[in-house]
Length: 113
Length: 110
Image (cartoon, rainbow over the protein chains, first blue to last red):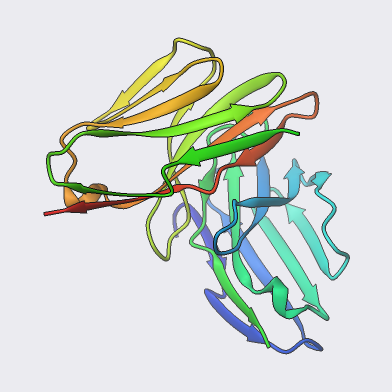
């Protein structure tokens, strides 16, 4: 595998389910990001991790819980989501300073019923 | 409030018809401006970073420029494979926030 991979690519869940999104980067980068992309809206930065430490949480509801066990892996744990949380969730990574050229994964298309 | 506005929202061009996409921003303390390309069903792909007014960067048929208030992405003699959504983002402020625009959907007709 090369670049940034995300699994699953598609996920349908009920509002009472618990699921996790996984992101893995094979680029040797130190920073990883979660973004939410909804139709007609700009990309929204959710969380930032730099060398496994969370450096940013953009007022994201607690039903989204990130986890970064090492610089190559990033998870987004989901529980009791709402239908408005349906969106494309993108993971990205970068080298060096935060927000340098970011490499994005293909995203997970999440549908909350 | 920091803002990034892209125009037009959508643009249809004939193959070979050059044009420009605009990204205007109102932020304090610009650290960098980024251009990305996003194809349907894929994540954004990095194109350029611009750091200061007057800077220009080129890649194949694309050229990005930056002023103190806006950036342009010039597309020269586009081909159908240039069809995509082009995203602009700025990094600014004391906390280095990154803010994306809504993007411009570009469609090049053969």
